[in-house]
Image 1 (tube, helix red, strand yellow):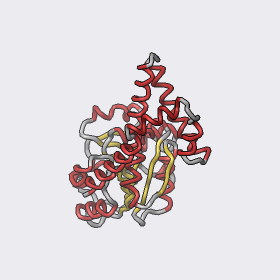
Image 2: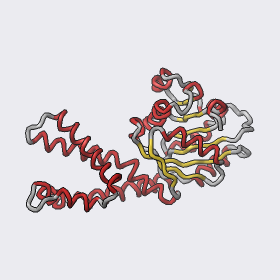
Image 3: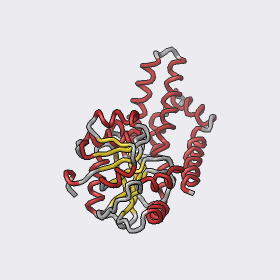
Image 4: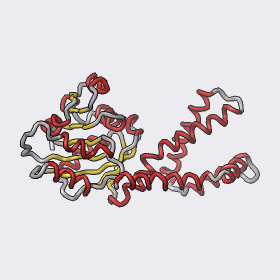
Length: 278
């Protein structure tokens, strides 16, 4: 599939769609002039227009002109959005690939909604779970397909996302739970970074310096896990000298039930994803 011959659409220009768009621009994966985004308020799409994309407040325009369409709307708006695609009442002969970012919504449910509202349309569905660090080219994006997606479409999708994220195809049964880790996890880490920086500030370190080093430390720790191949528990042990300062801090974290709380956080986010899908 040649980039010059397809149009990429976004229905919803919110934070996650914008993160993907920025990644596409950064990696030069697709011409912005071949991208169309729709949203109810054109003033909120100013960045897209400034960067060369086309904007509209009519969702049907995206269906009429685009071959790959990212659905970046709230779950409770899904049926309304699907119905809104029919406004132009044009017959669509070409195949459409819908890329769903809707948390918890299974490909089967999206398929049923599209078929019910637009019988006869040729389409396939890819479900993705991106995260906001894609904005700076350091994201993770899980994806799964409905089984009808062609290899050329998959290749094109990966080219759109590869410049901003690590990509992994997973069974759909993992999307809610692993997605809770990868998509919700950054918020947990922001909280950790803020708290660690606050701890240093309490000890007299300037806030900007504390925040910067807390963030760099988290990045480096993640790289240690990925590049060393060692279990995080072993890496932790290697830092904890007998009777040293680190093990004293670890004891406080254990007393505060940090690990149990993080486990519960992933569990709570997983359950919420499942509720949203229902």
